[in-house]
Image (cartoon, rainbow, N blue to C red; front, side, top):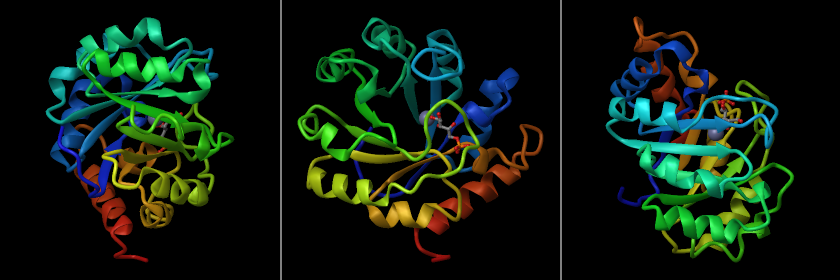
Length: 229
Ligand code: DX5
Ligand code: ZN
C-alpha cells in the first residue's frame, strides 16, 4: 500500500448481498472501487452483528486491492492476529472500544497491518492527539456505528481539526457513514481522502447488473472532486 491523498472510494460490503460476498467484491473492484471496506460488528460494542475473521479470510482472494477492515468490536486485542491472518491490509479499531487504544495500534502494526483508529460522532478529534505517530488512518464516523443506510451527521469541523493535527504525516482521513453525492463534497473539502459508502454504491445494482455500481462510484468521486459543487 502506497500513501497518497487522492480521493479513494471504499464501498462497504455491509450493503452487498451477504450470500454473494466474493462476487460482490469482484464486481465493485471491476466497477472502479479503490478499497473494499469490511464492517465487523459484535453485537456488544454496537447493537448489530455482521461477521468475523473467517468471512474476511473467505473474501480475501476475491479482492485485488486494499481490504479495509473496520472493527466495531470490544475487546479488540484478542482478535487482531485473526484479522491480520485473514489478510486485512488495514485494521481499524475504535478509540471508544477499550482503555488501551495505544497498545491496540501497536499490536495491529506488529501483526503486519496498517493501523486505523476510528472516532464515534461524540468523540473529539483530540482523542487521537497522542496516537498520530502510531496510526495510518483516522476514521471519522459520520453516523453512530451499527447499521448501514443512516443519515449523515456533519463532522466537518472535526475533519478540519484532524487534517491540521495530522500535518505532513502519512495518515489517511476516512469518512464512514451516510456518504453520497450530496455529502461527499464537504468532507473532501475538509480534508478527507477515503470515502466509505455502502448504500450509495450498492443502490440500484447487483452482481448480474453491476453497471450501476460503477455509475454510483463515479458520481461520488466526481462530487468529491468538486464537479458538482
Ligand atoms: C456503520 C458502518 C458503515 C456503514 C456505511 O456502522 O461502519 O461502514 O455501513 O454505510 P452507509 O454508506 O450506508 O451509511
Ligand atoms: Zn465502516
